[in-house]
Length: 100
Image 1 (cartoon, one colour):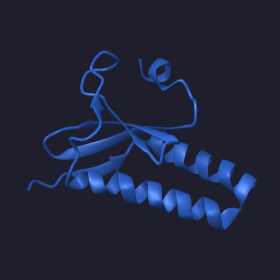
Image 2 (cartoon, one colour; image 1 turned 30 degrees about the vertical axis):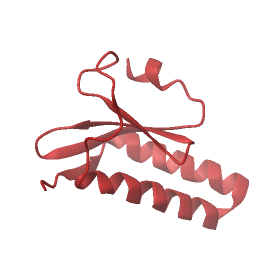
Image 3 (cartoon, helix red, strand yellow; image 1 turned 180 degrees about the horizontal axis):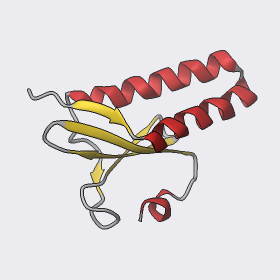
């Protein structure tokens, strides 16, 4: 089984921070930290099984989309050595327009 390095693009890191702040304001810091930790762990698991989700070459070549706990859409690409988490879209955000 081939392992790939998982990296978060700066935009994805920003998305994590914004999401954490948003959750903390509504549900508390502990809830936000737990949610963000689960989301990061899920993304880091792409190291061993990156070929998940749905290919969306119609939006951007090599783009893959998958969901997390029915609330976050994860946009990422896979190369021979790396998985790049491009963006993390929470709720009903219009991710196809943002990535197109």
